[in-house]
Length: 76
Image 1: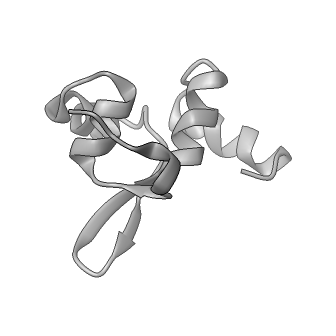
Image 2: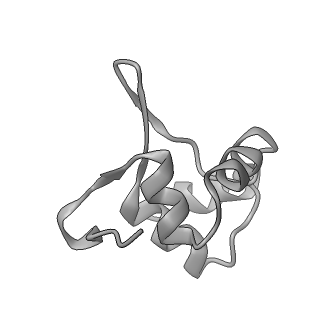
């Protein structure tokens, strides 16, 4: 699935998984194990911030706990 990330700030689970190059089930496994940045809830939708995922990958995909600490020192 090709995702036009330049136009999207928030990504669905399917889009976020595609951007990361993993399956949707792998995305949810990372999320439930605390390895992925927290998503945004908009109504009933769960969405991930494109820019946060990009920065998280550039930081070598730290655990959520470490990511929160890193985010606290940056403007992510």
